[in-house]
Image (cartoon, rainbow, N blue to C red; front, top):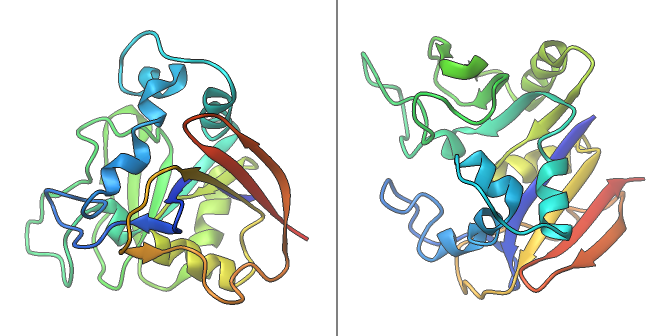
Length: 211
């Protein structure tokens, strides 16, 4: 199964703000989309802290960490760089020496690059032959577990258009971004139905499942 978990959008539909860059990887104002996550118990554990809230938000975040054997992400989620990789390129993602995945991660890109082995079991593989090839490799690497589809917006849209996403969990955050990258466009959710919707003060959680 290919699953999207805890993908955050604003109430006006944006999954990232404008002007994404190294200093502002989710675009101007986009970091506010994730503030709620780090107030939960699971979110705080992910960042090495104690405490945090329980309830529906924590339940949703925890569900996005279980039963997974591989992740697919777009190059924009991996880092701010564009175009060919520089010789001796040292960028290895936003997450430091021990990324939070702890399984194989397949990064969609137009430019080949050798795999990068990180601490904690994360290995970044760079896939240049399209979304289907990335899913095939990730499914094999997952060894019978599910594959998680990360961002960004464009990557999720490509897999939705191809009808390859089995389940999509969107967390709608009560902020307005006004501009940026909008997740849902005309026809993008054809063939999907809303199978669950629950809310806290911090987020409204919507799950779309493929019919």
